[in-house]
Length: 420
Image (cartoon, rainbow, N blue to C red):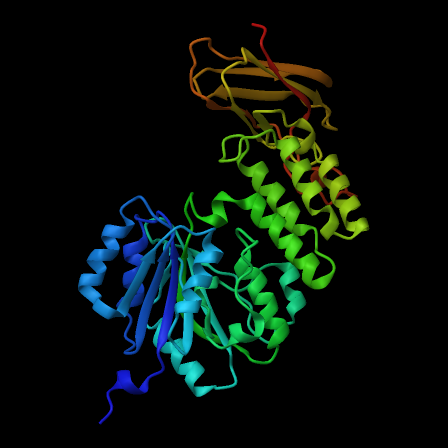
């Protein structure tokens, strides 16, 4: 009698790796400990110098010929995955990054579906984001077929590690585009949805966990991800929606200048716009540039400073000023007290070094807040917070307003002064 391993279709899971020693054992075990009898894991490592290779040697001793691996220089993750795909022996192929995880039963579930539905060339399923420790963060925003290829204009609705394919599809659509550094999976999905619009299926089952951490591509190369996605959409559809760039800019606003990208915000955004101009329709590009240029957050940003105002310059009840650098002796906030009821503003200012003071602004019109930076303060990153209990909501005092925001005053200009 044939054993299950002899009758089940072989599944090859390909895994690119480079210096993921923190996560690769958990990733590999999430594959090798699956309850599917005909399975191999093929790891293509890019010449790791951390603890990856000793880990793979240990795993080889435990799992034997279920694991194959090689380590050599490559030109990036797409190149590594393509090498693995060309070495894959399985009828079905999964692709798991070395910091991600399969959910229990993922391989058996996907293989059973592909076996039962021979016309289906690709399946994907539910997935979730987890943090460095494996703690669940949120479900991945997945859409189910039928989905038109143009839907990718709105975003990527497929979590890459939840995908399983027939190996033969690469004979039709080709391998990954190695000119792409980050969005090669996104580009492949578009090709597959164009080539096989009615042969892609969804499995209503949790298949994978995508790990978010500071070093992963999703987190560390946001600008390049946005640029490549826009270029890909422009290539495949002759246009790209500008929201990809707006999302990237909002992410910059959320962390600048304390995030991983501390280069001057305005120059950074302008350079990114220049790179995507040819992929956007002229009208969309002009509107995008104008929308960004009119945003008070963009206008107020300095090299090494960001003011957390609303896009029209009004400040919220808690205004956060983030600063990077050690040269300034004072931070100057030029404000306008212009609330319609003319009530005084009571403000409380505090800084990272512990100083705090309060003041009341009685007169309508412009005023200045000066926050001295101690000469002996050596921290590179610091913050200044301005709190107010005197916010007003426009719709509460103006019957024609639908503005529900809590507003305090307007921030007109910010200075980093070298004068005491």
